[in-house]
Image 1 (tube, helix red, strand yellow):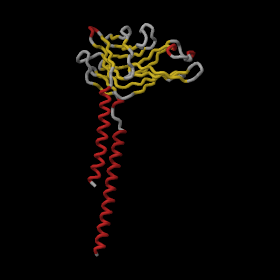
Image 2: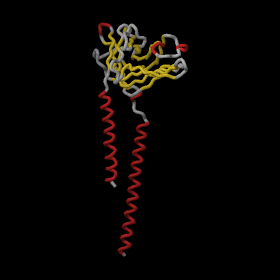
Image 3: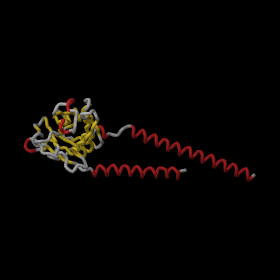
Image 4: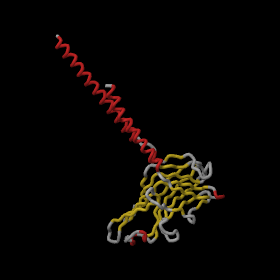
Length: 259
């Protein structure tokens, strides 16, 4: 029976190792796009590394049909990620902004912007606002009667209470709804990114990171694993008991035949 138990565990353990190794390999293979905003004296004020940021937009056209389009701000499949706007990005010591624009067209003619706002408090810093700016002209045949010509939608208090000389890191995929206006919906799909603002122990380098809530282990996983192990133990015990009973009957039958 011990051999059967060892065999079952021996099959599960390699599978778990393969899953963990695959996850680690994927994280290591992610290609990051790097953005920085300089402050006073040319020192780094904001540093952001991003692996994936996609804006998914759903809207109604002039006939009322639901349409959808995606903007690959930063993606492994995007050859030209959105660039930092030097004119609009800024840092004044207590507030900072990183603004990215659609690099498929000149900055002075684009209406597509994605920005991150940072604020500095007494004991920590916050990534307060994510904002998407656009024009109705960016969407073919949109029902422009429900929206003004120039629009902006935002997501407030993305991350707050991050300690000074600490970065924030998030690898899990997150989907955030910017707006639920009728006839128009903007969702942000993001994963694999790291950010720090205002205070750096060493200029231009990330400090140790706080883990975002999305990356924290869920209590569901340990429960599922515990239940699975419990079932395995029960099966092993039941199998052992059945085997023991069968062996006892065989022994009893052998003794009876001998008599």
